Each structure stands twice: as structure tokens, then as C-alpha cells.
Length: 358
Ligand code: MRU
Image 1 (cartoon, rainbow, N blue to C red):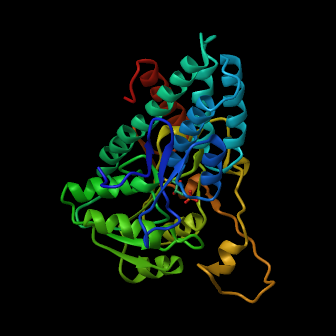
Image 2 (image 1 turned 90 degrees about the vertical axis):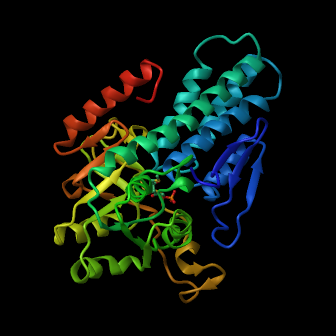
Image 3 (image 1 turned 60 degrees about the vertical axis):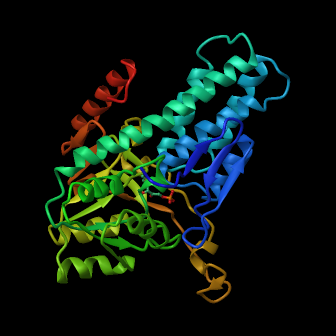
């Protein structure tokens, strides 16, 4: 496990490793209200689909604890209000809505004898989501291992490690599992404009894990594939549609096109909580557009003339035909995705009804 933790529940508040400050400073922020958690998700103090899901679940625990009035009805109303606030914080990663809905259904499960009983149930569900995420990621790592040959040269986009999850990571979890298995992997780390999750966060994690890597500008990936050779691309995901289209950090689609042009397998690591069978295709996935300042500035420095118009889609959709396989905690799904994804979701439901991740 990582020596740092993106999310820690402190009993009466949520502690987040502030990802906006990395790698310059390791600093934690403590949040005492649901509104503060929603703000931290929006501002990306916490980020990465599974991490924002778990943080939101704890946000609801804070909503229940701090509800005014003292009755179970008032606590439920506060949780419901918090749920709407949290779901609106970032629209693309379905893990956020998934975690919020899961906690909400626990809160609505029965009439609770007191506000404290409801708050305890909500907190327990949030903790279950956080703990399951770690097991899920380790299982993704185990399944993904079969796809990583000895000495693999891998391109990775954005950050999908311990920081983006509760621990271990999804795509970075596969890389980590391969490294731990002695596969001698080397990672080309896409810097990931404009928020630089690759440059700031993935290199920070890989250095601590001792995984050999080189940082590249996003536009360099195709050149490296053609001139140096790349064995596979590994990325995470914010939402998988029922047909296998995947939404992930902006730049993922361009990487997938380059991979297809060079015959490089393109793998997506995603827990089943990222699979959304109610979204038929990628066209129905809401794409978050963020502040123009993210493109116009690097840190405090303006990199374009004042007044320059900006488009800043934070995610893109990679059509299913460019995705070689999707690695989940229940196994690797290959095309045709409609059947494979439906089957894996059935497996996940069955495992959950038996009280375990798998
Ligand atoms: O905007 P971010 O940094 O939250 O985007 C993160 C990604 O796109 C990740 O690839 C995705 O959430 C999967 S993280 C395990």
C-alpha cells in the first residue's frame, strides 16, 4: 500500500491529501461539512473517479452528522440535499453518482430510530465503499497482469494510482502489479495537459514505487510509438457506456488513435462501478467543461495573450472499436462489449448480494 492516503475518515471529518499542491507540498485538508467535500471535488483537491466516489460517500456521512433538527427525518433530508450537491460537483465520472446512490439507498432502507442511527449507517456504507475500492484495485491489478509482457514499454495517461483511488490504483495498479511481479516494465508518462496529472502526480507515485519511467509531452506519444516501440497503452476511465465507449481524461482518444495506427493494444482499467449500462453509447456521456484559466495559465504564468478564447473539455470519449479490452475486478472484458459488460455487471451484482467484492 502507499505510504500516503488520498482519503482518510477521521470519525468526525474527512482528511484529503490536497492533490492541487503535489508534488511541491504534501499537505492535507480537513473537511467538516458536505458542502466542503463538494467544493473539494469541484476544485480537484481530490480527483480520479473512484476517489471522488469515496469522498462523496463520506460527504454524505458528514451531511447526516451535521444535520440540524436532530430527527431521523431531518438527517435523511440533509443526506438527500447533500446527494444533489455532490452529484453536481463533477458530471463525467459515474463513480460519483454510483457511490452517492449507494449511500442514499442505505439511508432510505428503513425508518431509523434516531438521527444517530441513520448517521452510523451512512458512515458504515461510506467505509464499505472505501474498503472495497482497495480490494477492487488489487483484483484489477491481478487480472491486468496477464496483459503485460516481460520488459513492456507502456504509455499511461493522466493519473490512475493511489491518489486517484482509495489505494493501489486502477491502470497504475496494473503497472504496479507488473512491477511487483518483476516484469521490468518501463512507463512513458503522458504529462496530461492542462491539469498535468501525469507530470505532477503519476511521476510522483511511480518514483515512490521505484517503477522506471520517463515523462513525455502528450503530443510525443505517437512519435515514441513509431520510433522507440511501445507494447501497450494503459489508461483509467471515468465512465464506460453499455457499448464499450469509454470516457477518460482529455487526450485519451488521441492516444487511442495513435495506438490503433501503430498496432499497439489499448487497455482500459475500470472497476465495475465505472460501467454505466444506463448510458447506451459515449455520445450520451456528459463531458465536463472546466475553467478557461486551466488552459490559459500554468501555475500563475499566463501562456497565451489576454483575452484568448478557450475550449476546455476535461474528458473525451474513445469509441469502443479502439479499445482492445477493459480490465475489471471480475476479469478482462473483450469485444463484443454489449454482452461482456452486461455479464460482468451481473457478476458484480451477484458478488455484492453475497456480501463481498468478489
Ligand atoms: O480530472 P481527473 O483528474 O479527475 O481525471 C481523472 C481521470 O481521467 C482518470 O483516468 C480516471 O478518473 C480514472 S482514475 C482511477
